[in-house]
Length: 320
Image (tube, rainbow, N blue to C red; front, side):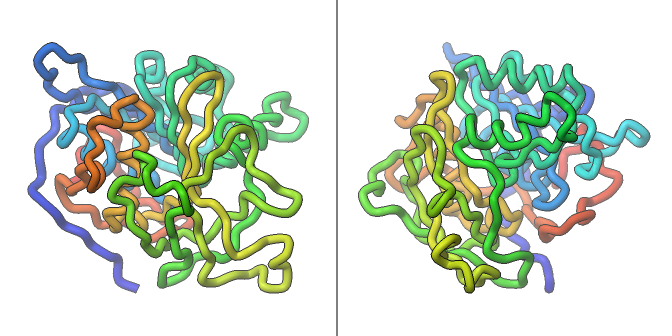
């Protein structure tokens, strides 16, 4: 299968200030206003968050004047981005001054000091956005006291742990996404029209598994291909794919979507950018048609695949 390519607009050069293990783009200050600082915490072996999240960060920087920092899993031997390196995400000190954090991580085994930086933020009452595999952000050995967060980070912070999904990698969309009845007027859904996602549907709600806390589902997904056709009473073909909740007084948004090809769809980009503006309390900057999400360069994502990351890229590199 050839990779989808989406080009829109012209590349805008970004001012790049280096922090070990992350890239940071500082927007010029608006008159009388300090720009919001959004920190992206990436690190998953499968869904290419190291490609999609910088693209979203550029949108925030260019269209909304935000200051953005992207933290990556970096191979200590090479200094290059390596999502398969589970034992570290560099640059997490940026969370100390973040106004909002975006998490897209999977099965990390972070050292104590890095884990503490994440939980210092999570418990601070500041807003959060989570994507897909952040339901299972950590995987510590069972005799490690931190192993409680293998499930609890997903359930407590974002509303659900990893359970199962309906399909797997394919060459076509696998989930039909639609707005849940009665939620059309939510500011996060402005301009978010129904679309088909390449993300295979996660089971998060129904039967013995229910969304945790005060989750308020906004979008539903219908699986177009399922490995659970013999267990549909237990794992129905329809499940929420996006919701809001709260944690420690913070506004939280989560979506189980996040396949790299999903972000070729403007509605998916609007969903994420809208949610960031909502988390920051700037619903006034979300027009009826949704946030501005024109790309500031080329987004040519790799397919979702284990070991499919692009080797040799360093955090300080700005991708065209």
